[in-house]
Length: 139
Image (cartoon, helix red, strand yellow):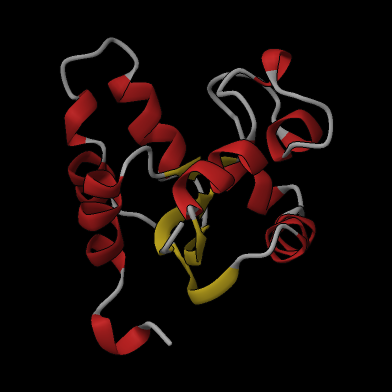
């Protein structure tokens, strides 16, 4: 499988709980190369733009509120088959259904406060990565 990039967010719940370092360690132990990483705080406009695909869903307002409540860490991860591997490391969206040893099983509070985000397809990663990173920022 060729080398691929994916996008990840360590969400406000995990940052506020001091879990950033443990999550980054899990990322590195899973064989990812971190090509870009920065801490930022999303504005309401940024969160609405990033999650535009969910605008008509009932959880949209709560998602935007959650994602703007504190700092996040955004990352570009690289390895073979990165999207699938990152989704495996994250675990199921609902931490109650996540496998032992996954980030969400270890750190998520519930389906809404689930610690991390990851691109679900190459097309999604191609939109999400430049939303937060310029090409010059990716090492």
